[in-house]
Structure formats: structure tokens, C-alpha cells
Length: 636
Image 1 (cartoon, rainbow, N blue to C red):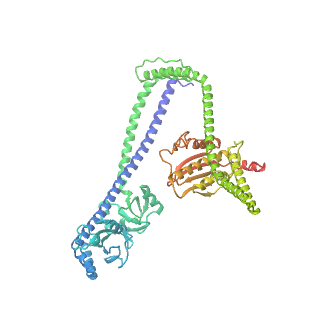
Image 2 (cartoon, rainbow, N blue to C red):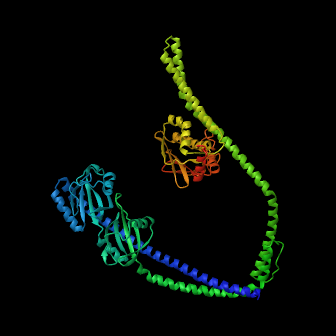
Image 3 (cartoon, one colour):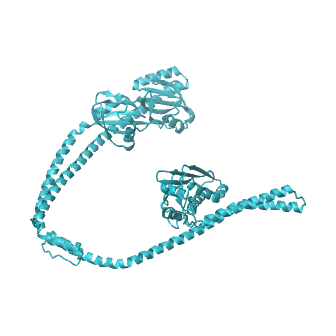
């Protein structure tokens, strides 16, 4: 039996209603789960920040109190007098008395060089040097009057405050540098009692961590003081570096963890604060949010039910006409229109359908007209692009010829000088009738050797300008060695050192001379940058390495790096950092064309620790290609 259109629509509305209800429930559930998680995260972050602020304020308070006491001891003048009179026994008695009166853990008296003169309550020995501590170095070298720092002593962290000690009988006025007697340090350990005080105000368990060791802690879960990290060190470092939370189970309690590096700590030390918040404290928050989620779902259900009810009654009147028009438009009858005067959204929808049909009809006519000319325009633009690339290639080749001629001049200068000198020697022997057979033979052999070198140089440069007929299998190392034959003498004349790190012998299928042009472009740019920016220690590092699919050639020079403002422009045509006389702006552009279009590779530029680097990545040939070429005696 055929189902009427009306019943189909009713059925679809019911199916849509059920789907919307289901989606509403799922959406509501996930939204509220996110809200719950965010609420817990925000609450935890607030409590962790409160504990952290209290801890840092407590450390600041201890440091400021220590500075008050150290200034109080110095201002009385007795200590300065005892030091001036070298009354060490009385100094020791005074330090013991002062330490007891201010409840300090340790008091240390240092001389002008940072060595221990006397101490009370610590493990330092007379003569021990504390000059490596930041707090001591800042006073000795910078003459800071007071400073506070956290150091490590007796397997615990200690808050040190310090002050300069001058001769109380000084007559130098403001210039007291010559009356500097030493440094007084007062220290308070960060103990369990210190952290328990913070826990009472925040309900957060704390631990002070030095590298991987627990220096002091609160009594976690009110059961025990911890002696080791409650999670492995790598996970702890991840929390510390990324400032993220972590969830762990420890001492039968579920905790949310956070960690942060300590302030004021010695630069040679690593210290951090580990904070833990029991998850049970968030149970009431989660219950309330789940209750709110149920309310939201019920509200969404009611709203969706009302919307579906009204839509099902208003849809059916106009939907037939709109469906008919849609079918006609889908069938290509763009001249079709619908006439609907319902005075509601459906009339607006019908008007929009008509407008859309008019636009589609218009655009269809324009598209047909465009298609008639598109192929011709594409061919024309492609031809222009080929002509442009051909012109740029010619210009690049001409620029390279100029550079090659300059290199030939460098290569020939010394051999020509040797030949000239030997010829002059022979002429002089003939003129003064002092011809020696052995000398004449040696001079002749020397000229023959130099002439052979000139001929070899011409062959190298002629090979560079020969066009590649076909690809061949060759390693980047061989092509680099060929480039050094051309440009090596220029490197030698400009005191440029080449360091090589070749870790690949894989042969690649490429155009030898085009690859040679790329290497020469990069090496020539590196040479010019080094000459311009460095007077000594000019170095070019070349690395060849490979992975599963690619062979990478990386060329770096220590010229100082490429300006970040132009780094993304250096491969554009006619872009050059040189003046018009010395640069065409085509070398790197042609290198990019060769690598990416001719050899299907990648080339990029980047900076690495004040080095300018170029990376060329070329795909390895398939193993079958290598085997087939080897069997046929292919070009190598």
C-alpha cells in the first residue's frame, strides 16, 4: 500500500523529534561533563594559587624578618668591633646568643672573600668558602646591601638573608669600600612545621622538592610525611614544565597534583613546590553540577517538543510546492518558479528559492560562456608561465656564467703566475748563457703541470654549462665534491673552512648539472655572507643524512643567520639582499624550481643558533629502480 505524502511527513517529523531528543540528551550530557571538569579545574587552580601565594608570602616574610634581624645585629656595632679586634671567642658567643634570641636555625659570618670566620647552628666549618652562592656573589661583586636567597644545607632548603658588614669606626664617609669587613648570613630552614602551618590555612598537602628528592613535606592524608615523589620523575617534570594538573592515587587517597618552580633559589640548584588536593573535596561540586545537568536536559526536552509540534503543522501546507521546485531545479529546469503567498517564513523561503533560481539561471549562462573561452585562456596563461620560467632560467644561467668566469680567474691566477715565473727563469738563463739542463727540465715540467691544471679547470667549468640530457644515479656527496672543484679555490683564498658530516651513501635519480647549480648557488651565497659578516673563523657545515624515504642535505654557515623579516621571501624571483651590481635575485628562485619542480623534492631555509641553513630533501628511488638500473649497467 502506498503511503501518502502527508503521512510520510508526519513520520519524518516524529523521527526527527526522536533524533533531536536523543541529540539533546547527548549534547547536554557532554556539555555538562565539560562544565563539571572546568568547574573542578577552576576550583583546584584557585586553591592551588592560594596555597602558592601563602607559601611565597611566608618565604618573603621569613626573608624580610631575617633582613631586619641581620641589620639589627650589625647596627649595634659590637660585631664590627669584635671583628676589628679579632676577638673570635666573643664573636662565637655573640652569634650563639643572637641565634637563640631570634630563633634562627643558623648564623654565619663570612670574611671579605666569602670564607667562614664563625658560625652558629650550621654545618659549616671555619675556612669553608661560600663564595659560589649567589647571595654571597651578589654582595662581593655588586656590593648589594641586602639580599635574600634559598640555598641547600643538611638535605634541606634554607632561606638565607644577608647584609654587608663595615668597620663601625670608618672615617671614609660614603666611600666604605675599603672598610668592608665581611658578610653576615641568617638562615631559617623550610621545615615540616613551616609547611604544616600553610596546610592549616589551605587544606592542601605540600612538599618541597630538590631535583628528585623530597626535602620537607606536610603529613599527607594526615597519615605520614612523604620521603619520595608520589609519581615517577618524568611525569612530575611534565606537570612542572607544562603547568598542568595530574591525577594520582596515593596513601589510599585520590589527589589532584600541581607543581611550580621556587623563586629566589640559587641558580645552581633546582627546587619546586608540589601541591596535592584530595578529590573528595570536589564531590559536592560534581553532585550539584549533575543536578543542574538534569534540569537543563528537561528544559531542552520541553522546548524541542513545542518547536516540533508547531513546525509539523506549518510545514505541510507549503512543503509540496517547495519540494516540487527543488526537484525541478535539481533536474536542470532553472526557469521554474514557485508562487506561494502564505505570509510567513515559507513565503520568504519560496521568494528566496525564486531568487536563487534566477541567479542559478544567470550563472549557468555565464558559466557556459566562460567554458567556451576557458581552455584558450588556460593555454595562454600556461604559455606565459613557460616563457617567464624560460626567461628566468636564461637570466639565471647568465648570472651563473658571470660568477663562473670570476671563479676561473681565481683558479687561473696562481698557475699563470707560476708559468710566467718559469718562463722568465728560462729567458734569464738564455740571456746570461747559463742554461742548465736540469733547471730547464724542471721549469718545463712545472709549466706543463700548470698548463694541465688550467686545462682541467676549463673542463670542470665546461661540464657545468652542459645541459642535462637525462637523469642519472649519483650521490649528493659526489656532486658536492664536483662543486668544490669549481669553488674550492675561492674558499681557500677567503679562509673559509668546510666541515663535512656525511652519513648517507644512497644514490639518487636526478639531473647532475642542475643539482650542481643548486649547490653552487647556496655555497656562493654562504661565501658572500661570511665575507660580509665575519672576519675570522669562517665555517660552512655540510651534513648528509637519510631516513626511510628521503636523503637530506643540510648546508649551514656561521654568518649570523638570515633576517627573520625576509626569511619567507628569499626564494621569490628577483628578491636579493645584495646591491644591483652583485645580485640578480634569481639564484635561490632557480634552486627552488630545480628542486621542487624538476626533482620533486623540497628546499627550505631556517636559522639555527646564529647560523644560516638550507635543507634539501630528495626522495629515495624505489629499490626496484636501483636493481633494474644495476642489472642494465645504468649510469653511475
